[in-house]
View 1: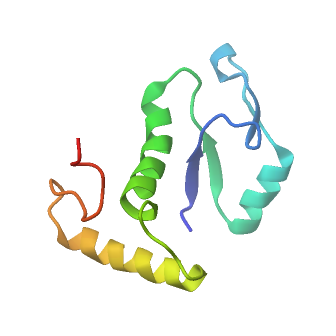
View 2: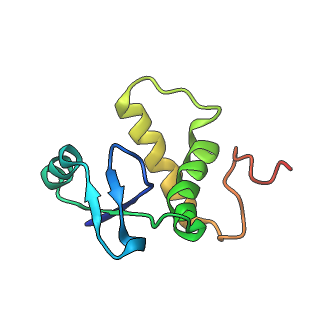
Length: 107
Protein backbone atom coordinates (compact mmCIF):
# COMPACT_ATOMS: atom_id res chain seq x y z
CA UNK A 1 0.00 0.00 0.00
CA UNK A 2 1.39 3.44 -0.89
CA UNK A 3 1.96 5.83 2.00
CA UNK A 4 -0.02 8.60 0.31
CA UNK A 5 -2.91 8.57 -2.19
CA UNK A 6 -4.22 11.51 -4.22
CA UNK A 7 -8.02 11.83 -4.55
CA UNK A 8 -10.36 13.98 -6.55
CA UNK A 9 -12.72 16.33 -4.70
CA UNK A 10 -15.39 13.66 -4.23
CA UNK A 11 -17.78 14.04 -1.30
CA UNK A 12 -16.84 10.63 0.10
CA UNK A 13 -13.34 12.00 0.73
CA UNK A 14 -13.62 15.81 1.05
CA UNK A 15 -16.49 17.63 2.75
CA UNK A 16 -15.17 21.15 2.21
CA UNK A 17 -12.05 22.66 0.68
CA UNK A 18 -11.30 26.17 1.88
CA UNK A 19 -7.60 26.17 0.98
CA UNK A 20 -8.10 28.87 -1.65
CA UNK A 21 -9.57 31.14 1.04
CA UNK A 22 -6.73 30.54 3.47
CA UNK A 23 -8.47 27.93 5.62
CA UNK A 24 -8.00 24.22 5.42
CA UNK A 25 -9.41 21.02 4.07
CA UNK A 26 -12.26 19.27 5.88
CA UNK A 27 -12.09 15.54 5.25
CA UNK A 28 -14.94 13.06 5.63
CA UNK A 29 -14.46 11.51 9.11
CA UNK A 30 -15.45 8.04 7.92
CA UNK A 31 -12.86 8.22 5.14
CA UNK A 32 -10.21 9.41 7.61
CA UNK A 33 -10.90 6.29 9.70
CA UNK A 34 -10.72 4.13 6.54
CA UNK A 35 -7.35 5.61 5.52
CA UNK A 36 -5.97 5.19 9.05
CA UNK A 37 -7.08 1.54 9.08
CA UNK A 38 -5.28 0.82 5.79
CA UNK A 39 -2.27 2.93 6.68
CA UNK A 40 -2.23 5.65 4.02
CA UNK A 41 -2.52 9.41 4.03
CA UNK A 42 -5.20 10.89 1.77
CA UNK A 43 -4.46 14.04 -0.22
CA UNK A 44 -7.05 15.96 -2.22
CA UNK A 45 -6.56 17.66 -5.59
CA UNK A 46 -6.75 21.42 -5.46
CA UNK A 47 -9.96 22.75 -6.98
CA UNK A 48 -9.72 24.24 -10.48
CA UNK A 49 -6.28 22.76 -11.07
CA UNK A 50 -6.44 20.45 -14.07
CA UNK A 51 -2.84 19.33 -13.66
CA UNK A 52 -3.46 17.39 -10.45
CA UNK A 53 -6.87 16.12 -11.54
CA UNK A 54 -5.20 14.46 -14.53
CA UNK A 55 -2.81 12.67 -12.18
CA UNK A 56 -5.84 11.08 -10.53
CA UNK A 57 -7.87 10.24 -13.64
CA UNK A 58 -5.25 9.20 -16.19
CA UNK A 59 -4.03 6.04 -14.39
CA UNK A 60 -7.63 4.84 -14.06
CA UNK A 61 -8.18 5.32 -17.80
CA UNK A 62 -4.94 3.48 -18.55
CA UNK A 63 -5.94 0.48 -16.45
CA UNK A 64 -9.46 0.44 -17.90
CA UNK A 65 -8.33 0.63 -21.54
CA UNK A 66 -5.17 -1.45 -21.29
CA UNK A 67 -6.31 -4.14 -18.91
CA UNK A 68 -10.03 -4.56 -18.21
CA UNK A 69 -11.55 -4.09 -21.68
CA UNK A 70 -11.71 -7.35 -23.62
CA UNK A 71 -10.78 -9.61 -20.73
CA UNK A 72 -12.77 -11.97 -18.58
CA UNK A 73 -11.87 -13.15 -15.10
CA UNK A 74 -12.87 -16.37 -13.40
CA UNK A 75 -12.35 -14.96 -9.90
CA UNK A 76 -10.19 -12.53 -7.92
CA UNK A 77 -7.19 -14.84 -8.12
CA UNK A 78 -7.44 -14.95 -11.93
CA UNK A 79 -7.68 -11.15 -12.05
CA UNK A 80 -4.54 -10.86 -9.90
CA UNK A 81 -2.65 -13.38 -12.04
CA UNK A 82 -3.53 -11.57 -15.28
CA UNK A 83 -2.61 -8.25 -13.67
CA UNK A 84 0.81 -9.57 -12.61
CA UNK A 85 1.42 -10.92 -16.14
CA UNK A 86 0.61 -7.52 -17.66
CA UNK A 87 2.91 -5.82 -15.13
CA UNK A 88 5.76 -8.13 -16.16
CA UNK A 89 5.12 -7.35 -19.86
CA UNK A 90 4.98 -3.61 -19.18
CA UNK A 91 8.32 -3.68 -17.36
CA UNK A 92 10.02 -5.28 -20.37
CA UNK A 93 8.70 -3.04 -23.16
CA UNK A 94 10.06 0.37 -24.11
CA UNK A 95 7.82 3.19 -22.90
CA UNK A 96 7.05 4.33 -26.46
CA UNK A 97 5.24 1.06 -27.28
CA UNK A 98 1.64 0.33 -26.32
CA UNK A 99 0.74 -2.96 -24.61
CA UNK A 100 -0.93 -5.64 -26.74
CA UNK A 101 -4.69 -5.29 -26.76
CA UNK A 102 -4.68 -1.64 -25.71
CA UNK A 103 -6.73 0.86 -27.67
CA UNK A 104 -4.01 3.51 -27.42
CA UNK A 105 -2.74 3.03 -30.95
CA UNK A 106 -6.13 2.32 -32.55
CA UNK A 107 -6.91 5.89 -33.51
